[in-house]
Amino acid sequence: MSASSLKQTATYWSPGAEDGFGKKTFTRGERRVRWEDRIEVVTDKKGKEYVSKSRIFSFDSFDLDGYLLLGSSGGADPTVVADAFEIHAVSSIPNLRNMKTLYVAYL
Image (cartoon, rainbow, N blue to C red; front, side):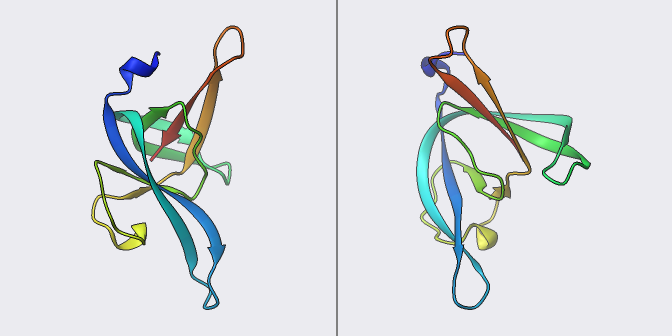
C-alpha cells in the first residue's frame, strides 16, 4: 500500500497518563488513513479472540487503548465522542526493504 492510498482523515487519540483522579488522559491528532469497515476475528491485548468491525491502515503507529474516529473531531476525551472507537489490536507490516512500516489498527 502506498501513501497515495491513504485518502481519508481520522482523528487519533493516543493514551496518556492518568490524571489525579484515576481517569486516563489523551493526546489528539489527525492522520491520513485507509479505513475499512470489515468484520474480522483478531486477538486482543489480553489474548482473547475479538470480533473487529473495522481495520485502519496508516504509516503512523497506533497504541493499544488509543481511540480512532473517521473524520475530524475537536473533542479532548474520546470516551464521550460519538463514533470514536477503542483500538483493541495493532499489527505492523514492514515493506520488503524494511524501510517503511504500515500499521493496522483493529477496532
